[in-house]
Length: 205
Image (tube, rainbow, N blue to C red; front, side, top):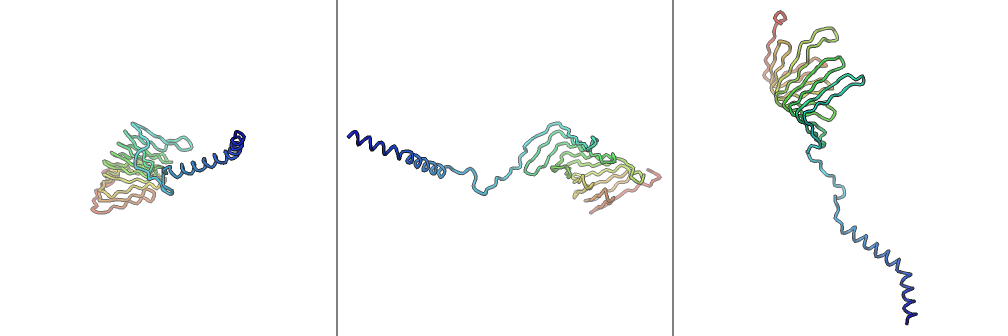
């Protein structure tokens, strides 16, 4: 009897690794089938419009390859939104200096810039000011200022647009309109809607 039990145990021990491997495979299969998926196949999580970092009483400067200041952005608070790669700034002040050293400033209650800073939207008490300059033809250009509740500035193409009422002050000349599109490179100002202007003769400037 003892010999029979020993023979049976010996035969069982030969097949025991195979049986254990089979049970392990069945267990693994059951575990995979029973575990809920974290995300459905092909499902892409929708990015929420929530800031991923904040700035407080900040100043950010950029420089060109020769170390000259190109721009400076200041504000009391700022929030970056990764889904749109935009930066929202409270009490914004922006300074831009071109290759010729000409200064342009932009201020507003709130500003919204894209990732590379090529577009800036200004909301509330928006102002864009180009300081007096001398053109390449040695012609003096007076101070130029745009005022509105909304201004959309394109820094790369040097354009300023608005679909809101605007006031433009060029030296002592003033213009008002319901909308505008100013192209600084082409030196073209387009005013739409109710347009009014006051031109001061050179003798009185």
